[in-house]
Structure formats: structure tokens, C-alpha cells
Length: 235
Ligand code: ATP
Picture 1: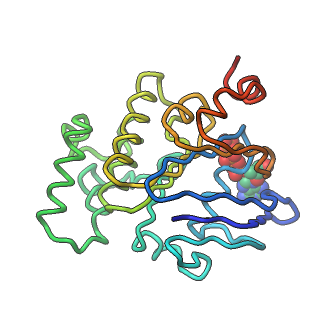
Picture 2: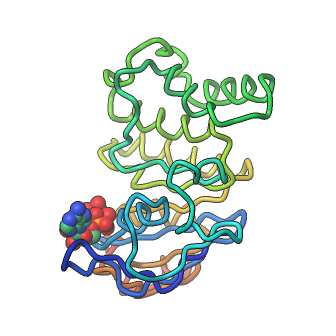
């Protein structure tokens, strides 16, 4: 569904991404794990066109994403939940969700059913429908960011460190939601520092170190890999 081939990204003279290759097949949850500064966010931002690559191909549903303007990528069915959430802080919760649904043309009934689904999943957002999004707690903002992406009815979701800054209980809750979103038919690429949690819900994983993919395999294989356990799983 999504294929990244021989990707090279620079920030000026800094070579951030070195010949990265990976793919995500329809229906999968794939995780890209790595330490701070490994290049995870850079890869997601390059996929969505916010950063230009120096070389390489990015294909989503057979289309070359490098030729598509960033604001059209959501219309193709690829939604990005960026790091730090980036919700519209001056708008209410409901207005943020409406912004998510803005690109849809599948009718009011389908959209209303998804508002219902989001509010059933996140009762806390329902209670806070008319609250300004900027005044939500960090965890609530993360719920809103994911919900806004759900409202766009994407075929695939790119999630950048959804666990960041959340309490362990909320992390579990958010990862369960990601699993549920996937079960509802949305393919997922999940970028995470929390390798333990990411590997617990993913089908397959890639390990990124200083801009290189150094290992790939099924989530189970990587969980059992002693080098990965030592470096990323705290054992
Ligand atoms: P984290 O988990 O800390 O968010 P990450 O794996 O997402 O890390 P990136 O943010 O993609 O890592 O950064 C990859 C590398 O590129 C780092 O060395 C970082 O310092 C560098 N980098 C990122 N953004 C810029 C920028 N705007 N200008 C220069 N260097 C940058």
C-alpha cells in the first residue's frame, strides 16, 4: 500500500536519512522504532511532503507521492497524526473534528455515524465538545488528534509517537484505540520510541538507527531478538 525506496533526506549538510527502504501492506500495523534523533519524524514528514527528499521513491496506492501536493495527500486516503498533536488549539473539540471530516463526500449519515463512533470511543471528548482544544490535557489532545484523523475516513494512518508524554494507563488506552482503528480497516504506520508497546500491537517492525534501517522482521521476532531487547526493551 505504501512503499518507500532508497530514501535520502538532508537538512542542509546534515544527512538525516540514508537509503531507507520499507513497505506497509494493506491491513497491516507496521512500526518504525528508534531512539531520539534516529529520523522517525523526518521519514513521516517526507512521506506527507512537508520535507523534500534528495532521492528515492514514495508510492502510496500506486501513486508517486512526490508529485502530489501535501494538502492533496489526505484526499488520497493517507492521514497523518503528527508528533506534538498539532490540533487547532483555537477551535473547539467539535470544530476540530469537523475539520477532519471536511474532505469527505460520502454523505451526512456516514459522517454522523463516525462522530458517534469517535464519541463512543472517547467519551471524554464528547463531554468536552465545546471546549477549546488548546485547553485540553495532553492525553485528551492526543485523543482528539487521532479522532480528527478518523473523521477523515482514511485508508491509512501515519502516527508519530502517540505515546509521547502520556501516563502508562493512557498509553495503553491509546494503543488499544490504534488496534481498533486498524481492525476497522485502516492500515497503520506507527512511529514510536516506546518499542515495547509498539511491538505489542504491530504485525511487522523496522528498526531505525541514525537514519539507517538496521533490522526488520515480524514484531514477534524483534521482541525475541536479544540485541533489540537490550537496546530498546529495557532488558
Ligand atoms: P525523536 O524521537 O527525538 O522525535 P526522531 O527519530 O523523530 O527523533 P527526527 O526528528 O526525524 O528524529 O530527526 C532526525 C535527525 O535530523 C536528528 O539528528 C535531528 O537533529 C535532525 N533534524 C531534524 N529536524 C531538523 C532540522 N529542521 N534541521 C536540522 N536538523 C534536523
